[in-house]
Length: 339
Image (tube, rainbow, N blue to C red; front, top):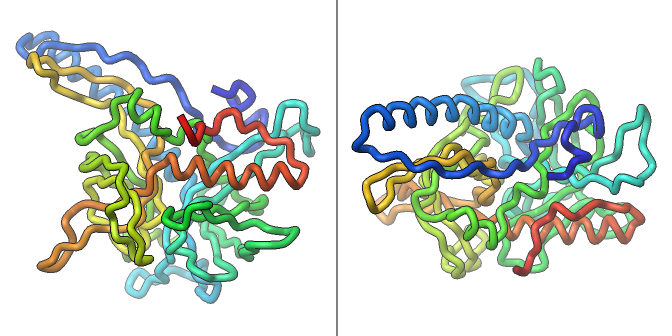
């Protein structure tokens, strides 16, 4: 963990959801009632504690609107203004020796991530985020500049990756939660933490038809990993075959761009009939990018996820550009793109 961000309120003036080392995995035998009950109660206590991760993730969610939409008008629950999609923020700090800003706060590069198909070829969008006190939402227009000296919008080097990153300046009156780069699950960490089919996850993003009347109210959905694949098999809405994981999720318009994170604690039954649990850091598994439709109508109940390793690749593209512009960023927490 980056010690400079251990107390983000004092050191950066920004809220940062940090990575923590996962705890061990105590094994308990189901056949022992007393032990099983103690384990279950402990597990329920961890569930309540880790519920704070869901609230933290929700505090970093932005709803993205077309620049022509009146996103902050008085919300009409009957005819809501529909967003283009969901986005979330990642923060990359400047190195410790960097010159502090006003009041001793260290600057942090704030980057919004969503899917490329959400933005398309638009030249501007409107972000709707909650104010710092969460009393109401505020809207912030962003011009998308893909080239030139004031570039702020970045695409992956590989066009089959459905992501886009936008550097966001300070938003007056708002302080959205930033995810630490160390939360992005690399391929190495997927193996290390045994992320596989059945692993429990949650996603926080837009609920079709309702986003909150006065403040953003992202919905939390829970499910399990349904498929892990490194093959380019998913035919996306962009007409390309892309790599994708699958998670149990009935996706809906507006949820694209939402982060999918590991739930905690993880509960498993082993081959000997014992069950175990482990407390997990809310690592980012990936980003919602589409759904699998059923040939007889509706969906198959699973959503396609852009792997977090691709987020790390794009984050390195952004930070490399920022470094070329003179920013001395601490990129030590960004997972390696090749392991």
